[in-house]
Length: 346
Image 1 (cartoon, rainbow, N blue to C red):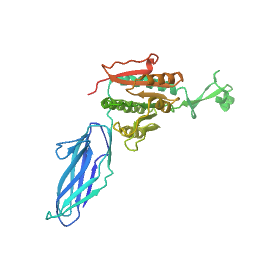
Image 2 (cartoon, rainbow, N blue to C red):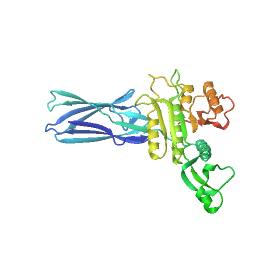
Image 3 (cartoon, rainbow, N blue to C red):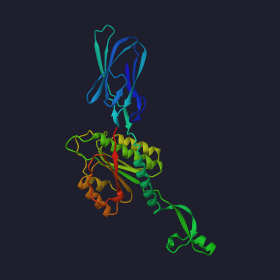
Image 4 (cartoon, helix red, strand yellow):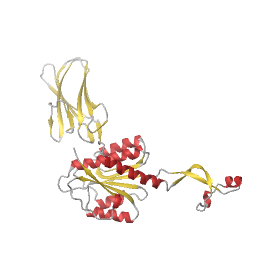
């Protein structure tokens, strides 16, 4: 007898519906009148008509089958993904009785199935304004740099041109100084910094999830405009327990990698202390990129570090989500670099 448990898709978005599939096959000639399948799924998967099973930190399913000889049973269990995350299906425990109910047999099957649930996107007018403002900054910064390997044409010499730009053949042919023109490079990218402030008591996980949604929404917007995007976070990876990071890239495949990286951020891990703001910004901020810091933290230490980075010439924006009734106390000097987003969580 073989048992398989898997999801029809390896990924979904928060709020989407998926199907968990249970597949049992009996290749023997004898009937198996009572086969019990026990396994665990996430408590954030809401099964339709959820009755069989118990829920604590996980959802424990306990399903019973009667399998005839040479029979395969395939059962679909639809559910709704209620929360972002990286979910691994637990091992399968199989209990079977013989035809006369005299003996019971038990088998444990390793199950390495996993599912990504990607963070939902934020759709608010304020965020669109932030994006357009930052896109203008990135575009202007890109125009400052030329790609010496991408030739675009020839123009007349100007007084500010250097000798190495002169096209000697074109100058000799026309009798006037001519210089080469190059396309502007697209190497300047947006570096998204996702910082979580670890507190001694339980933090507001709904707000931190909103911070994550802001990050993935901004990444999607920039990648849609062919702007390279990288990600650095002090959040811990649910898979390897390290910090979640992703190098610069562009295109649909990079967006998929970005979704997967952000889905793996596990805010429930408490066995490892999160990196502090000073060391995080020193490590994560890039001097030649446009940095976008998204965090609910607004401590004096954070403000001091950011002002120091501003004095050093770092290009950054600080996206600060907060509740409407929050009292925001900030030092002067951030100007348009600070963008506060009033949050109305559902």
